[in-house]
Image (cartoon, rainbow, N blue to C red; front, top):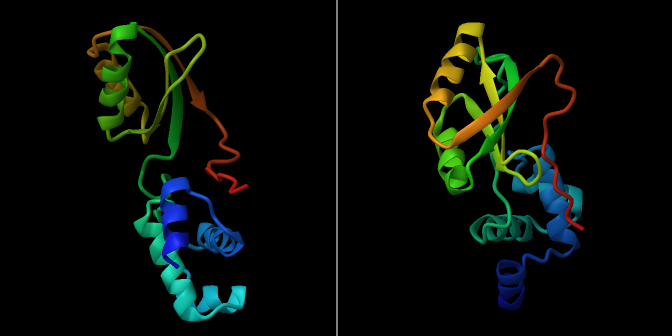
Length: 159
């Protein structure tokens, strides 16, 4: 068993049972070890051990995803920023620290940074833009309000 632990933590390679466990937890992060064991036809102790190993090695994280509509921030707009090269990391970190900003990525291409911003009423959007104008290093930006969100999930494949 130690060999498998080392293999998973150093190379992040998952055998079929690990992949199946991750798939089950992706659908229901609160699934009981007994249910995992039952669905995969493995002993409960094996399910428990493997889930704990995957968590402790950092290969997986189990998170709760809040529903923005239920929390009063049902609207989203996307912002693409052109930033001076020496300020890219600072601007990205500043945006990441803002509560209303839910996604930030440094990207290649015409823009340097992409962000998703959640808000409840239009005044909150104006407040965000006021904050944005205070951040040094931003050359320009474009934003678009998302009118209809069709899919908002990040499912990474294991193969």
